[in-house]
Length: 125
Image (cartoon, rainbow, N blue to C red; front, side, top):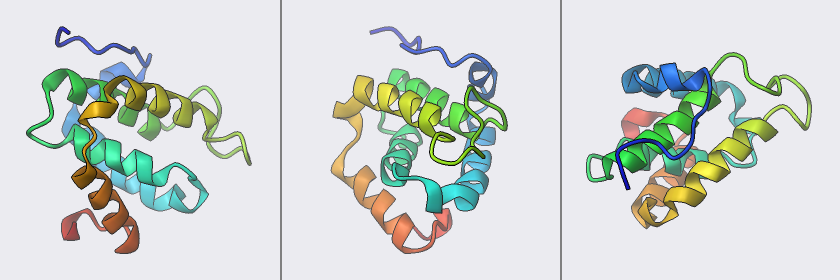
C-alpha cells in the first residue's frame, strides 16, 4: 500500500495535513460531546493508534483524516441534531477503522478505556 490515504474526507483533508491541530481540536471537541457518543472508545482507540509512533504512516494518515472529519465544525449531518448528529462521523470512523483494524492494538484500546475512566485528560494516560 502506498502512503496515500485510502479515503478522502473533503474539507477534512486540509485539516488532516496539520496533525497537531487535529490533536488539539480532537480533545476540545471530545470533551464537549463525549456523553453523546456511543462510539467514544473506538474514536479514542483510533486517536491513540494514529498518534502512536510505531503505527505505519499510511495508517496514521487514514486515521488522522477520520479524526479531522470528527473535529470539523461543520460536516454533512450537523452534530447538534439529536440522534442523527454523529452518524456521519461514526460512518467515516468505521470505514477508516475497518481499513486499518489490524493496526489498532489492545494497548490503544486500553488507553482509550483509561482516558474515559479518567475523564478524558490526555496528559494522564
